[in-house]
Length: 423
Image (cartoon, rainbow, N blue to C red; front, side):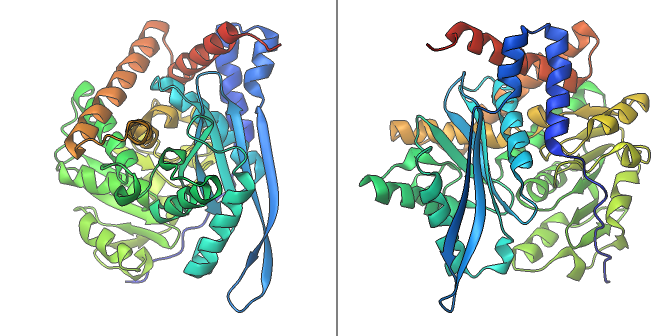
């Protein structure tokens, strides 16, 4: 059955959303005006226009960015995104969210993000490698295991991380495995990294289900985004008995009220297929996924998807944000009026950065863990953070987003204040 294309609605500037969320936390903390300005501003921004040799010998110029938001708690950590809609404001917002995300789960990192304006699907493998190595060279002045450690994001994967690691290593004359995370295991990656963000979402939903007395076996799930995050989360939740009734990606939305065969869909997609070519369900418009009456809605695509207009149609009991910034501030306000519980991105999707931290630690020690140990440590870290956020939300009558932001900003503010202003 043919599936209609997902139609993207209006998306607000993600930087406006990030600053608004920070501002609300800063108001509650009554931050010193000077510190408030420091934390609201990205520390360092690199923009680069670089040439890439294409197949056939032609040359094309691409634009890329690498942004550091705050380094008070440790080296910069954040993914690299390849997407046609990448912008400097988007990268700034994502870097800021990475700062709060690392602080919520108490990792010794600051926030960073990178991106290149490109459709990676339009490039051959040779062109993609040429672009990656040239972009890495341009931003290499920022990179290092004690400075800035990139990771995969939308449009990038472990193969691209291997090229980044190799490029930096060639420049320095020795293997620098700890300069990037999300690498293949054979070149210093960690077991359990590929599905880490999706597994973190599973652990959060398991905690929520227990807290809310919702049996996970049979619980209904809708997932927007069927890539590394959404696809992994859907498969893991289905493996626990949940009924994944809808999934969507850029090609369309597939729905089956009895439950989709998620594993079969993932296998078809990994083989090069798209949801628009697959059976097993009925077609929906992409935005219809948000209006399905499900127990858990997992937006795991781009930022700015749940606006005030979208939120009015949401019938899910709980939203668990797998993407970065999928809900705008006005969307949040509507969801609050409707009493929809939202687990914010800076808590819900931290599985990736947590296991990236584990990979970085293993690379620095040249000592690697078994996958079961990685999973156990991930569950322990993300569950502890969830409990801390829930306790703060309950004690101060806050939403989970407000509590997570308050916890994160207070930790970064403390580190910034204790370190002082140099000189």
